[in-house]
Length: 190
Image 1 (cartoon, rainbow, N blue to C red):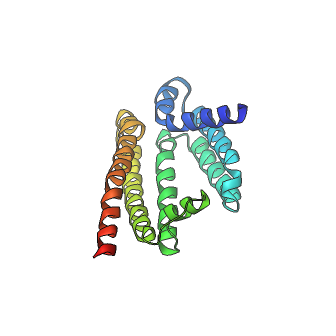
Image 2 (image 1 turned 180 degrees about the vertical axis):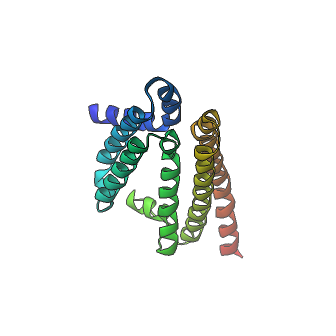
Image 3 (image 1 turned 60 degrees about the horizontal axis):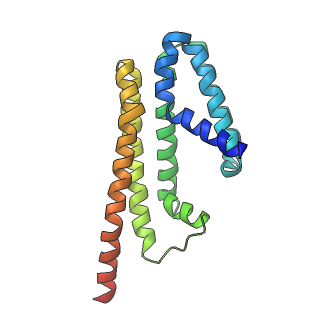
């Protein structure tokens, strides 16, 4: 039970990260907020260690180097690059599996023990491609907000609007799935 509470607390802290930065920068400064981010990210990595396997040491080095860079540069724009790194990593995961099938979504479903019908892999590949496009565009917008926009714009986009866009994409996929299934059923019948 304590492990679940810790997982939830770390997850919620990282999801609300833009709000934490917004409140924390004015009160504590860049370096202390970078240390807080570093602790949260290291905790998240430790919780995901089993899933990350060989990528775990690389992730630790990347997070450590990023936090050290933010602390040494003492530039809050670098601190705002966390959403860029996350979106870039998710884009990389999606893109890698498009080049080296099966797609990320198919892999996740298989790891969860789900049976995948023969007609599903092309659809899952298309959805993975949609997520890859979303994450690369999201990373670009997040980078712009980190480098050129006021802090309030960065908080609004990365702490609210990006999540609305993610929910919209999930909703669109949810609506598209039965349409795809009906199209496959029609092809099989006719």
